Length: 539
Image 1 (cartoon, rainbow, N blue to C red):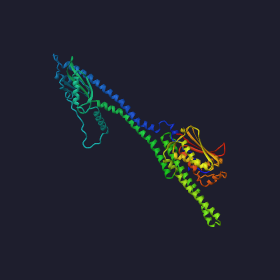
Image 2: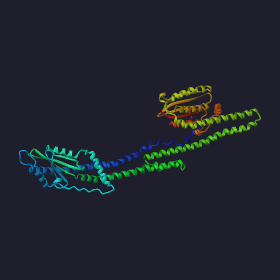
Image 3: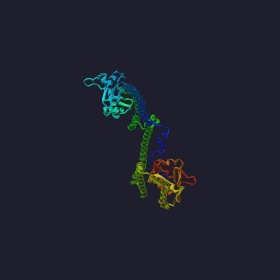
Image 4: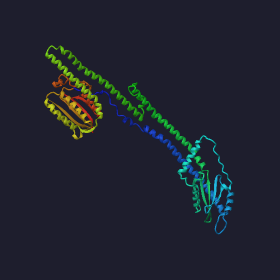
């Protein structure tokens, strides 16, 4: 039978679709590790902040309640002892200062007394003759205290975020003004020195007349804040530890395997290995396993292509060497020809073998360009029925001269016989099959074409009435450069021997495989002849 096989090894099994079987058994993979690792530290910090913000709020409220109770007590004492029993209640400032000097107060609490016209009357720092002593920083450059610097930075941020840029004196006056209206004011603010304080301002009133306001401030809130920070340290350290562990885990699970894959790929590039040595990584049930699978499949495919090219080059050399040897022998015998008949015969041999070499070179060039052409060509949806109708019309005149009739029938509606692919390439398959059938058909004979839809596939058959194919050659005809012309193939079949390169069926199978289809041959059971079946995915 004339024509042959794809330039690839037909026994090579197609690589399974990567990821489809692997990803079904995956639950997260590296994406889940990255997500959990990056959010674990944040979750710890958020939980710690929420917990200890609530703790700080509770401590601050408790401090405010204590100051309010003390302030209410002092205000009651001043209302009884520092307001004369006059018709118009007025605060006796001297007596009020004396009373405040004798009263005991919580350590660290600052007490200030204001008149009704917002004038300061007394301040505990003056009444107690308190002298503020601060330690000066050492002379010369000193190593910065990281804890102090961090604390100062956090405090500055808090001041900015809570609007402490407002004048502390104005904030105090607003509190006193509100208290002079008979209301108790509680607040958390910053004093003139930028320290965080808890402040409670209570009105001093006799019956319903407000004669002044008493403000108590506690500056030990900074200690509460510092205690809060110390309580947050375990959470911060835990977050850092989790982040470090996650970074190590990511490096171990991603960076190290990628370096191993890179080293294995480099070994293939340098020729130290023919295939990717990544069997351990391919067993991983994650994206690294997918990548290792893809790289291994790619290198195996490249190696198969290299082997196929080597075999193809050897076959090409062999196929071209045979006609060249015949030409050489005929050329050497031509000068010694004794008759015109033998001379003409030798010249015919030279001419036929030269044409065969030309045909071989042309078909080999076409086969070598096939992969690139298939990669560049765009896929389109087209009708197989329309293509078969065009081929029947084209081969009708050719078959008429040899009394070979070309018929086509459809097992489904023609609008259901559509495929998506490269129309010119599919037409090339059918043209090769028709050329093959035409060369083997006796006179008269019929070549039958049929097309039908079989589930998700379009099935096209080309049947002839030739001598058929030997059972042992049903697969061999798809070997490159394979030609089989039996002696009973008829005059046309014998005349065609030597005119075929043996690449027609090879190219047909290669095109079918590139479209996700298949092609095979079988003998007809109802009569003599062969049948070629082409299956392509339906569009």
